Image (cartoon, rainbow, N blue to C red; front, top):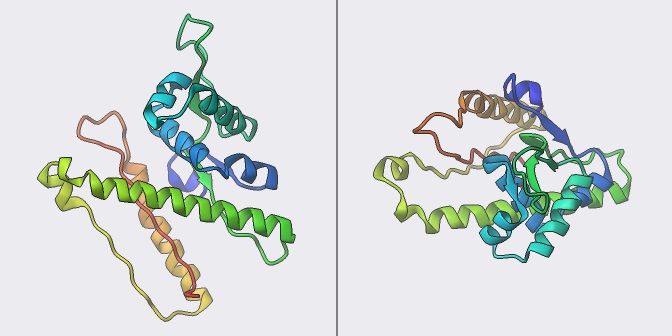
Length: 195
């Protein structure tokens, strides 16, 4: 999904280099980036408390994210110079696959990053299920999990993926964090050939 596909205001960052992939390929970095995309800006201390990590560890990982262009300092949030505020630089990360022409090193970095992203998202989904009892009935009724196997050609799979992406893009365009009833939700899709 590109920034233009998501909404007029959306921005994205492509994972177009091994260096950038390695800057993101750590579970805490993925969680920090995800949190900053929802609650930006935040300080090292706020993020350390939320994730149960030391401030030094969080600071180290935030600097790695900043070096990859994923986050940036949020200037003007505090008069306290000892306090650094951070915000996400982009709303999306463009996870792609490594093309057949990519180098083995690039394919390996891409594969490791996608495995890590699936593991982090799996943790988020497990947490959502664990906390589901805290939700009101309307939110519980709105949640859904679906998977299916279809027998398609590669071109049909590509077409299906594009259609699913269009549906997700439609709902992302409706997203408005300022609406009182709006909460952050995950809309996730994977389209892969069965191993």
